[in-house]
Length: 230
Length: 108
Image (cartoon, rainbow over all chains, first blue to last red; front, top):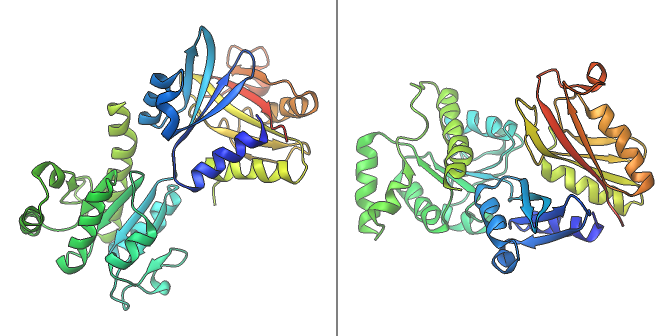
């Protein structure tokens, strides 16, 4: 591999853009295809299918064995609410290989002491989220169940097309949230993208157990649903 | 912290820019139960330093020694490991799977 190709792979990852390295396994010839140029590549169909699945794999192009190395941006988890569940959740998310950040304007909650080694933004979501940057490789979790904090953040997550959106709250709390989001102009299909109650139904009780349920649900959407779509 | 693919490719670039000989190994095919998925990377430098994995540690030693040849010669190599391999006692996959690993040099 040429160093310049490797440099493009690293640049694109840093900029959170997907990219595919196409390797001819018979000749060793390679090219890098950025997501934005995928549709004009001779192997567009194969490349686009790989980008959708996010998985590397073999492919036959012009009768020769090739390998497509898919690089999708690292998954980031943005949690609004520096609450007890987040304290258990953040280290687990990190261990599972996800970048995790916490946002909460309540400075008593959003203290670095409560979240060692995790970036904490003691700001309102409207200020913090544009800087953090939400995108299709971001999972978003709202855990304050305070509409003043959660609602603007959910609004941003829905607009940014986060691949997973979860919100804590009982069925009743969520029903009221659905009303507010509907009034704000979101469609039924938009709102259906919100996982609520949040997390897999494993009967979780403690904050750490709820953290496991949320993390498992995020992984499920990332690995299983995306693969099914491809 | 456990290295992810992000760290591995950045390390490959950093080592190359620092003037070291570097090879990148990529799992390109798996059959049966293989420990690491297709697309997994292992980066190796000319001194045998490495980061990442292509198996659960079963065949890394063999991949690293092949990688040193690739760094020296420059020609990419396709390696295959599995229980059917006659060197299985030494570098086979105990899980019973088979994997194919593509090893290429990073050319500065």
